[in-house]
Length: 311
Image 1 (cartoon, rainbow, N blue to C red):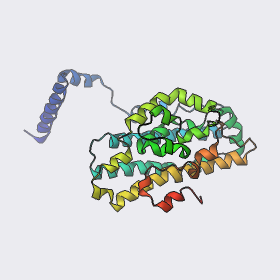
Image 2 (image 1 turned 120 degrees about the horizontal axis):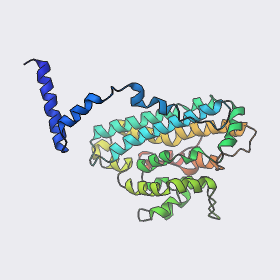
Image 3 (image 1 turned 30 degrees about the horizontal axis):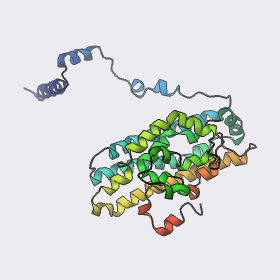
Image 4 (image 1 turned 180 degrees about the horizontal axis):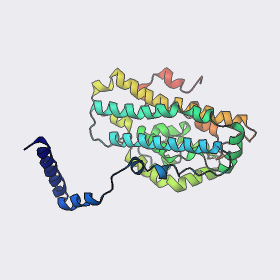
C-alpha cells in the first residue's frame, strides 16, 4: 500500500470519527461534496457584498473616504474583540498565550493609531464641512464596539467619570454605574440630568447589550486575567511593557490622533465648532479630562498625576 492510499484511509477514518461524534453519516457528507462548488477568493471574502456597503449621502467624493475609513476601523475593532474574547474566556491562560493575544490586540490598535493621516490629511476641509451636516446627528461617538473593547479591557471603575468614582464600587448596580460612565459627559447635563439625542439614540440601540457586557467581563477582563498570572510573570518586564503600551496606545495615542484630526476639520471650517452629534467633544476626547487608564497599577504616581498633560 503506497503513501497516497495510506493517507486516504487515515483521512477517511478521521472523518468517520468526526461525524460519529455528532451522530452524522459520513457517506452523506461525502456525497454532498460531489455537488459542492469549488470555493473562490471572492466568495470566501464576500468581496462583492463588502464593496457594496459604502453608501454616500451626498455627491461629495471625499465622503467616500470618510465612510470607508470608519468601516475599516469597525473591522479592526471586531478583530480586537475577537482576540480579547479568546483571552478573557480562557479559564487560566498561560503566560505565553496571554502575551501573544496582548501583542495581537496592540498591533491592531497600533494600526488604528497610525491611520489617522488617512482621514486627517485625506479629505478636503471644504468638502467635509459640507457633508458633515448631512451626517448630523450621527457621530463616531456611537461606535458600540469601541465601548465593548473598554468594558473587556479593564475594571469598570476605571471607566467611570472621574468626578463620581468615589461614590461607585463593585456593589453598585450596573445600571447606576452605566449612568456615570465617562462618555456620558459628552451628551449629558449633570445639573439637569437631560441627555442629548446623541446619547438617547445610542442607549436605545445598545444599552441592554452594554449592561450584559459590563456584567460578563466584570471578573474576566484583561486586567483581571493579568492578575491571575503567576506573581513572577506579572513582574516580567516585557509583559508589563506590553500592558503599558496597550494602555497608552488606546487611551492617549489613539485618542489624541482622533482629537487632532477632529480639530483640523471642526475648528478650521466655517461651522459651529461642534461635533456632528452635538457632543462636548474636547472634554469627552482629551485624556486629561476623564483620565481613562486601563491598568493604573502599572503606572507610577507621577505618571498618573500627569496623565494626558502636555500633549
